[in-house]
Image 1 (cartoon, rainbow over the protein chains, first blue to last red):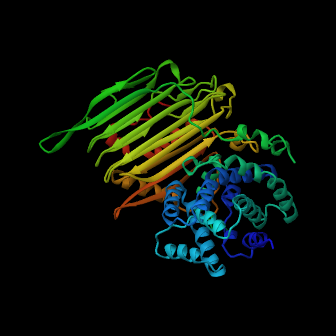
Image 2 (image 1 turned 30 degrees about the horizontal axis):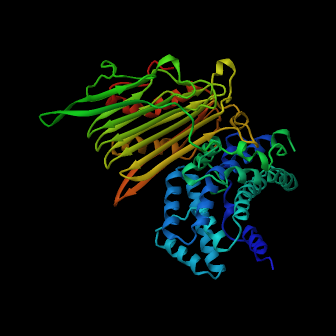
Image 3 (image 1 turned 120 degrees about the vertical axis):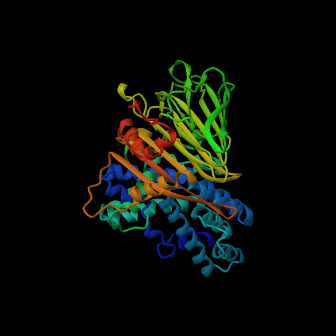
Length: 225
Length: 316
């Protein structure tokens, strides 16, 4: 039986309650600022976010995946992520999603290791950054590293596409067509960042980061980030 | 599928080419510079900041003009490179040390120009700074301007102690705009790390270069300047609290958003052995260099009395 595929489907399903759908990865601010106003620059915005997920977050996913049994290393990675994610909107989104991923997983998957991490979160000994928690969980659930990477970058893409639909900027069919087009780049991003260490984790396209950083100054907003 | 999204050009075989430049960069042996500052006390009062060590080798030059700051309790250090810019393979390493209770401004006379890369050589600049307790280091260089085909790598590390403060401005532009250059360099890699004692508390790494999915000039659209300004430490608490209120507040109803200059702000809070250190990071993206100069001058103006002048005066 291919247990992995159904696990992947379950975690990637929008019914899996990790709260990913309350985030727009900065799209809402970009639209408000007038930076995203055509299909073409929406696609470019999305690619920039995916590239940043690859160059900034994937190294943490990889490192946490390889040290899923080593709590000290996970704590180090989490604390490093905290120092590097100094955009408070991205930081908040990362902590929220990481925490709900673990809390949800602890209730669903009967695994001692997940519960130990949940305890560390409860005791405030971990911030619980999403990339670190995601890498850890993928390893515990015995997914392949490549599948974990795909799910991670796919998740960023899917989140942006879904928020664009909900912000009313693109229709559902058009959104899926764009998603299909951009999905073709996922493996390319993963391949380029496969051997990137956390010390080399970086932002490739800074503008989307700055745009997202202004999120809290909007008068009215639909999303958390 | 649009042309720029065409992935057929990137297959498994050319993986090494599409990999980011993560190996140690190729450059010449370093040209070192070092500047050390000490306080001078008289009858329990700080009367001056004195430079005790000033060393540099070609192509680096350090200047300490004595008439730019109106106060003796702040020294201004100018970092200069011969020949109007840095060429491929130049490798500059600058160390700055502030003992306790010093205020020092580090700036430049003009933007740092980086010429095109030759023989895969990278232009490197490394800065290491130690800021003693009660000291304030104000690091305000002009922007880095990478010319067409330049490859630039910068690493700046700031070591703070309990009670020391730092202003760090790091910014870069799209190139020789007057010649129509627009994000045509090979790579711009910048790392800023801030340590409190031995703990990494802030790190920002940008590695700007074309990817097979998106060239930099497309991602940047009309933006020509990107920058970041970090303010940390007790000497700056009034300033960063004011900025967090002013720049971080919600826009009023009906506010007309402009995209020519986008300024964002995040609070910073670190904990080290029970003590909390606060600060803020301001980020900016803009169409022109002048817009960022204006913005930074406005943001930092409350500091000018302590510095004995305006480091942005006559610069734009």
